[in-house]
Length: 409
Image 1 (cartoon, helix red, strand yellow):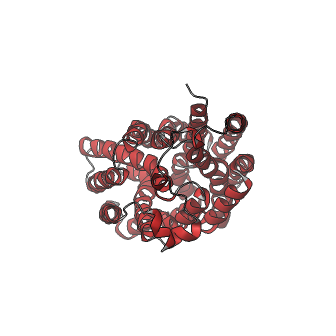
Image 2: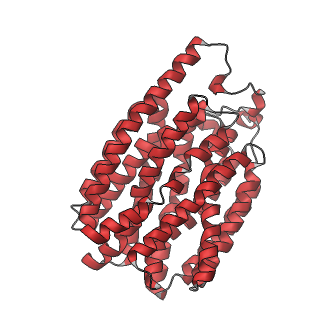
Image 3: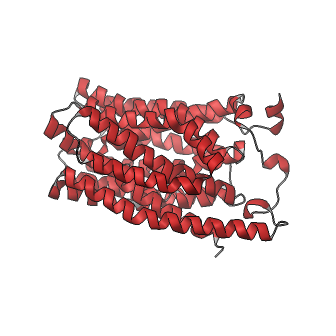
């Protein structure tokens, strides 16, 4: 196996650990916050939503910094910040402190230490099999499934404060050594490239220039397709963020135990893992845009019935469809961005795109919490999410791949 694939595997493992604790696992802290402090679900949801503002406000700066300084150095800083965020979470005694711990600790550290630098390394290293590489990397959240019930178990057994400390310790213990391994792998790849200057760039076969665009940020911002694609992904994130944050509490309201509900959320993540690889593989063979449209339609139907049906025999199959669609969408977003706009300013373009997506990711959990507080049910909120997914499908229909000539218009 080519050494560069170990970069993808190592990235997948770190992505799994981070997602298990800092994303899916965070929903297990929701019920204890509500019970101990008496905060409304809208207020608690605001903490998760404000976490997404970090991506919007700092995403372009993070991306520019990663592109200019390099992803390898910043990984260590981000991992430490994320770990400290969990330690800070264990000391929370007010709503503002909850917001600061999540936004400036856990989420900022996750972005700097895990998501953006590894995405850039993969985008630059792979070309011919880029979708498959991202599919394997994005399988991390899928294999993080067993960590979610583990977080639910430590919250139920030792309390949420101890669970926060344990989460931070595990993140640091696992992520820092793997970050060192990733740095060594990248250094080896760079040395090999320097010794073989005639080899094709990024370890792939030579392509026609029109298939390898290298837009600058300024050029991308003038492209209609950038705004269509970014808005479609913002709507997609509105749906998945809203569902993910409220998934456990939805099931608890319907009579599920905390550990069982956390376990089903973990199973949902695990189910999505094959779709991440499968759609990554298909993305190298078929039209990625049409694949995304199909997955958004499946997302719409599944979310609608998850909101309306309380019967397990209906909810569970819909949850499976939702999980597969979620997983597939997660693996195709970055390959489309790299194919459409190139890797010259990949991290910076990704950061600006995240600013657009922030609107959706901020509103998703907040809408679900607000509608629940009004109706005491998630039915209307999930119906709204189903309609939003249909709108995203139409935008992706319009978001066709740009031509290089468009940059000079």
